[in-house]
Length: 70
Image 1 (cartoon, rainbow, N blue to C red):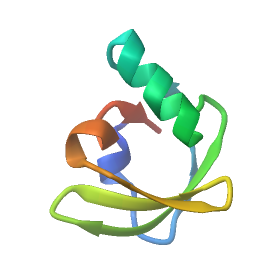
Image 2 (cartoon, one colour; image 1 turned 120 degrees about the vertical axis):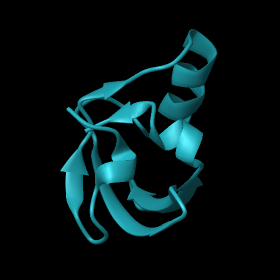
Image 3 (tube, helix red, strand yellow; image 1 turned 180 degrees about the horizontal axis):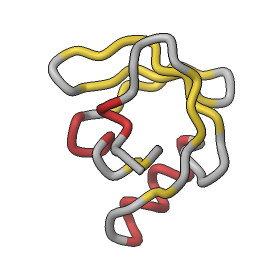
Image 4 (spheres, rainbow, N blue to C red; image 1 turned 90 degrees about the vertical axis):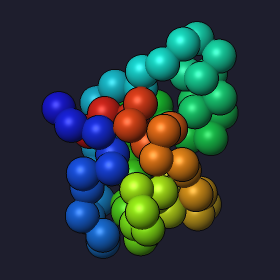
């Protein structure tokens, strides 16, 4: 397992685990980041990641992306 920040642009990946405190996990789950879910990395800039989750583009900070394990 590795953090989302290590994924390559254009790569479709499967989320294995969402970490962090309960509030952070709940927030990420409401955005569509759930274990077993598919995510496509659109672009990465300075550790911040723009992804496609369930048909929506979402920008995630480097800190939050490090809590999403792939």
